[in-house]
Length: 191
Image (cartoon, rainbow, N blue to C red; front, side):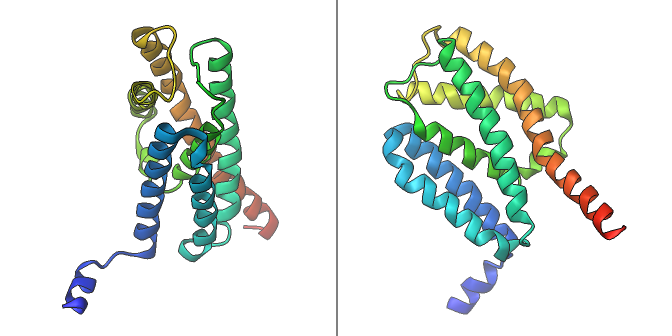
């Protein structure tokens, strides 16, 4: 019976890692939104585990790629959220350190559980970003993780426009490292 169940669940290491990445991101999103900064004890170890498992699933080159994307996308996302807080579009009861961890998890998801979005046309990426980006913040507001002082209607419009621009930019930033790495390898090894 065990053998039969195991053989019917034949998934590759890559598929298992994509599943881990998706579940990890969802776990961090939900716990962060519901419990705030106290979830750092969960989100940081999950991110460390991501990098520990990564060479087992891909190659060691995937680590600098994910770190680069995490740095670029994470910092840009945190800067945009910081600007929105400064402009008064967002208000948080306590400074949201958890939001930084959420950005880092989102960034590494671009190479794994969200990598399918790369295959979409830029217009579809913008539509998906506009819809799901603002819905994520709206859900956070409904769960009392963030206040939207301008009201839901205005905030949704602002966030939809921002995310319609940001998601294609994030996809570009995550692709750009791969292109630069291939170009650098080609120059280094004369390919």
